[in-house]
Image (cartoon, rainbow, N blue to C red):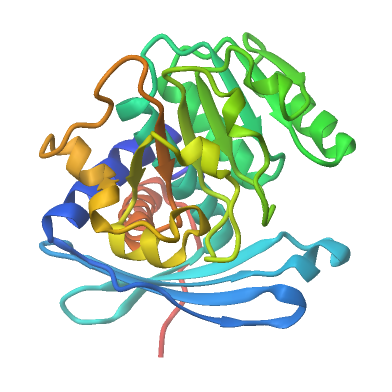
Length: 309
């Protein structure tokens, strides 16, 4: 989004996560309902103490969209005045969702990944994978990206896009297992309901970010990946309720990224420790990025003004 570069989104989301953990952000667990062909729709409101804005996002994840040339994720964000309740902006939510989800991955990588990380294994080749790539490259000196996806054509197309975007970075298409060899950062941004790699191939000190699965019956990471790892989440309540990787765990088994950023709990405790950031998405991410994008759009003269009845 022109109005909100990734680096700025990362800083905004980091501040939002701290507010979420210290109680200044108010974000209920999202409500959802099934739609056709295994899809789902969700409502995600968010408010923040002291903010001039509130927001509500309506998002649909629709597998059936792919056969009709429509993106998998479609969403609309309503940004409103927190004092009057008057709607201020309607924002195309798929782009915003990709940006804020990528920013969350960037926040986690900046806080948890090895500082000298040079190899990224990226599972997925959709829009979410693109913003995750942008975010990790914004915070770590990645020299090689290994792209993994089930469809070789999607992998080739994504790799070509990434090479053009980052000509200084080596981008290759790799198999699920070989992609992990020597990787310091692993990101999964897929729609797979089952684990996308074998965790016993992960090396020591690896950081893993998983953003694709967000329902209890789905998981991108296997038990071997989670076993013995330092598990960090966006929000305890939402992640423990929704993430398949976390089923059977309790509040004491995970820490929030906002707590790590505020230094109330440690993040990585040793160079050999594996860290896992599991994000199911949170409305505070939408609010802080939408607020920033709205203010920047006004300043830059972007968008179209409409008269609300």
